[in-house]
Image 1 (cartoon, helix red, strand yellow):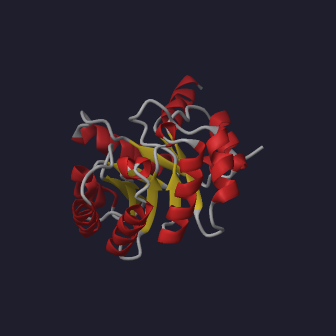
Image 2 (tube, rainbow, N blue to C red):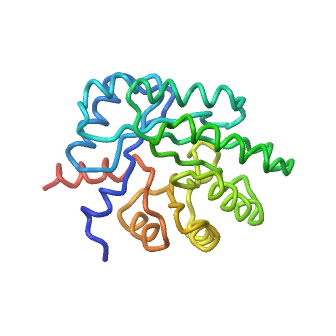
Amino acid sequence: MIKTEKILSAIDHTLLSPTATKNDILTLCDEALQFGVASVCVPPSYVALVNNYVGGKIKICTVVGFPNGYSSSAVKVYETKEAISRGADEIDMVINLGWVKDNRFNELLSEIKAVRNACEGKILKVIVETCLLTEEEKIRMCGIVSAAGADYIKTSTGFSGGGATLADIKLFAKHKSPNLKIKAAGGISSLEDAEMMLKAGAERLGTSKIIKMMKEQIKDI
């Protein structure tokens, strides 16, 4: 059994709701600091606020091309540069899913490389939205994301009707390069879910529900 502290240390504590308020975001930060998670994942417009608030005590993650992935490559590069200038430590970018369906894999590779370069050495996670891909496409994206030099391949945005599955984590683990890590996101709502994902090969977890559950448990003691 994986210790709770290890599970918590793998979590990107996430709030990407379009109606998230300043107070919601600051509460997210307080929770993240309390429970020792890997990072907070927040909308780009809140990165500067969070940077000032946490003062380097926790990593700041934000999203690029989110949630649909069909922004132009130049826009994704700009978003990345702006986010890093405001204090982001980690970038979660969404691929262009239409390009996957059109077999435009060279363009996908070029785009991810461009965002990789714009990251200036910061962590890059590439969201491939597994619920919209065939198994063959998932395997192909493992190769593309590996070749692009990203740090993580990430399952889901959580905005497309499906999240991480054990089958997808195992598939990624089988077909990715040794240097590429896996982030499972979407639908992870318990410590048991999290433990299964980590045992299957994930090293990072995108979730908002586990910390809420932990707070409720503390409240009930």
